[in-house]
Amino acid sequence: MTDDRSDTIETAILERVHAREPGATICPSEVARGLWAANEWRSRMDDVRAAAARLAEAGDVVATQHGATVDIRTARGPIRIGRPADNAS
Image (cartoon, rainbow, N blue to C red; front, side, top):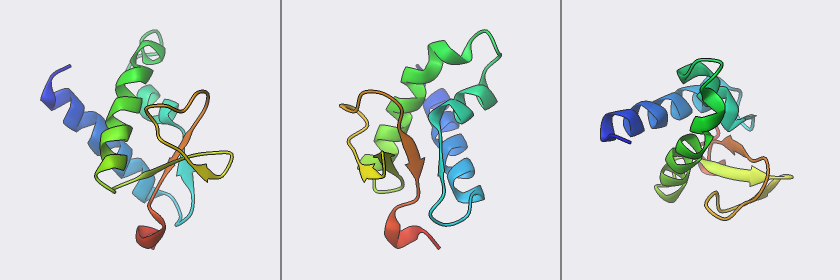
């Protein structure tokens, strides 16, 4: 994936997270569905999760699973992405 595409995904994640109320989260599939066609978004979920992992490592977002913070790169199953607690407002 090109750096431009990675930047686009990261921007889309941040825009969606910050459009939500503080404390609310998004599903990575929302980002994928917003960026790719109906027949392509599922195959791009790894790209979205990788972009979210980079943002989490930078402290820009947090990933949760069942309300607990998780490492996106090792989490299995559905995750949610939100603002860090100190940036929730």
